[in-house]
Image (cartoon, rainbow, N blue to C red; front, side):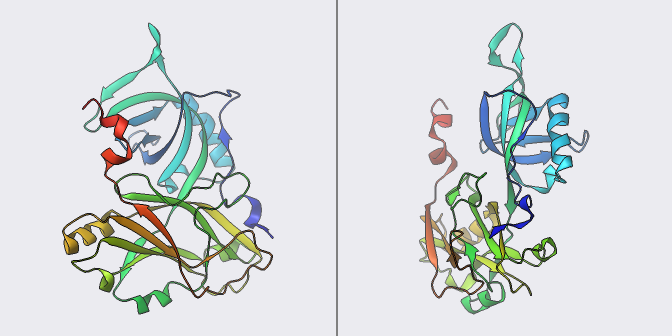
Length: 284
């Protein structure tokens, strides 16, 4: 058993230098500056992080050598050092204040995690799930290989859920494109009395009938439109988001593409941004 092609899971630590200590490590959204073609990053609170040209060039060279295009990914975990003002080396430079937060110049030191994006969609009834759920997923939140920290199903901000997962497949990189991972909610399950929002993590294997290797990665689910639907029907935020998945462990001696009979539930207490990051709001 092996990770497919040892690199498709994108778990390498991409470092731009020999520095072993950093000012910060953050999971951030990835955006592209349409004028410069260079990326910038934004955290959950709206703070922007702008890599210097030299530090971006170093990291981008490693991304390119691994055939990775950073802007193909919605989120990433970055390591960085602040660019500091010469007159006060303890203070990070603040280029400007944006509408939602501060903007910082950073020396990008490395990227350790790139998040795949699983599309969020809906079906009318639970019966329709069978069209999108033909094989199990790897247990949500487990390690997906030795280079990755496990990410338990969790809420990043008011619109994004993150976790690690993946699936078993043939040991053939061309088969990877047959597999589709989606997050689905069922319209018929939403009523005015609904307290919790149930989302199904579904894997369709296409015509791949093998379980010789695995693909595992970090995933982000943009649930904003789905939550708007929940609010329209119920008039409120959910108390919990419940991810349901038909799972199989990565650590199994008998991997299979057969669906388990039952779902495993992962409950996430839904929180506002202020509840998620209280220290950022203490002085406001």
